[in-house]
Length: 484
Image (cartoon, rainbow, N blue to C red; front, side, top):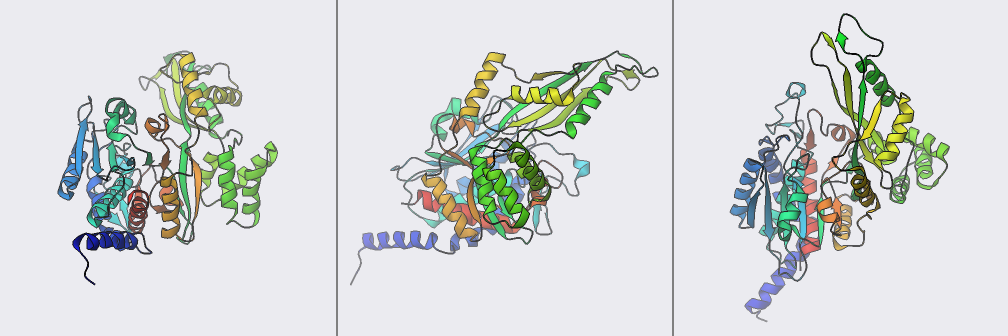
C-alpha cells in the first residue's frame, strides 16, 4: 500500500516522538558533548556581580540561537552592560509556554585562592572548573543545549518553550522582578523551571536522589552595631567596640537555632529514610515524625554530623544565621569607636526575621550590641513583606512540568528517589511565584558533597559526565511537557 505525503509526515512525526521519549533519547546523548563546550564558552565571560555585566555573554547566546534559527532578543536594562536574553522555540499555541530560567551573573572570586583561572573554562580530572560552573552557567548550558536538541529533532510542539538568561540574580535592581514589571508578556508561562533542587550522588558515584524544589527559604538580614571609646591604639580601652563585636560573633559562630521543620521538610526526611539504614534511618524518621524538641535536636545533630550531605540537611531543618560582612576601623593605629556586622539569615517558611533577632539577642546576651532587621522598608511594610513571603504556598506537585521532571529523573537515574523539597537558599523565582505561576527548582546535574561545598567558593566545578546526563534529563523533560 502506498502512503501519501501527509500520512508519511504524520507517521514520521509520531515515530520521532516515540523514539525521542524512549529508553535512550539518542539525539540528546549524541549532542550532549556540546554542552561541555558551550559551558566552557560561557565561563569565559566575566559576569561577576557586582557589577554584573552580562551583555557580552548574552550577545554570544544570541549568535548561538540565531544560528539555530530560534527567535530571540536581548533586553537591556537601565544599568550599563546589564542585559537579559530571551529565546522562544515556537509551538502551535494550543497550550501556554513552559519557561527555563538561568541566571548569567555570578558571585565574585578571590583569584589568588583558585588553582586555575576562574574564567578560563578549564577541564581538569573530569570536571569543568570556573566561576559559575555549577551556579548557574552549568544550568544555562544544559538548558540551552536541550533546547537546541529539541529544535533539531523537529518534534512538533503544543506549547512554546522559552529560555531566559537573566541578569542581577546574585544582587542588583534589574533582575526578574524588574523584567516581570516591564516585559511580562515575554516571560509569561504556565510553569517555570529555575535553579534550585539538588541531584545527589552517593560516595560510590551512584545518583540516589533528585530534589525538585517547590519553594525557597526566605532571605533576610540582621545588622549588629556596637559603640566604644575611640582612642590611640597604644592605649586599649576595656569598652572596645571591636572587642565587644568580636566576642558577640564568637558566640554566634558556635550557636545554632533549634530545629524548625515544616510539613514539606518532614516529608523530605521521610523520603530519605526509605533508603537509609541503621541509626541514620532512625534519626531521619525522628525528624520526619517527632514533635519532641529534645528528640529533634539530638537526631538533627547526628544527621548534621554524619549524613552524606550534612551541611544541606543541617540548613533544611532550621533557620540559619551566618556572619558575612564585618566593618570596623579607619587606620591601623586608631581604635575605632564603632563596629558593625551583617548576619545573613535564611528563614524556614513560617518564621520571621524578628523571631530570629530575638533568638540572636538571647544567644549574645550583651545589651551593648544593638541588633536590627536589615531592610530599606519601614517596619510595617517589612512585616507585611515577610508575612506575604512566609504564607506563600509551595508550587503543586500535580502539574505536567513536575510530572515530566519526575518521569525523566527516574528514567535518567533509575536508582534515584525523586522528591519535592524546600530550597535552603533563595532564587529569583518570586517574579513568577508572586503571580501564582508554579515554579520549580533544579540544578540539572548530579553532584557529590565536595562539589556542592565549592558553590560560591574556590575551584567551583561540575563533572563532564553530569553535564551529559543533565542534558538528556532536561531534553526528555521538554519532550514530555511540550511535544504534541
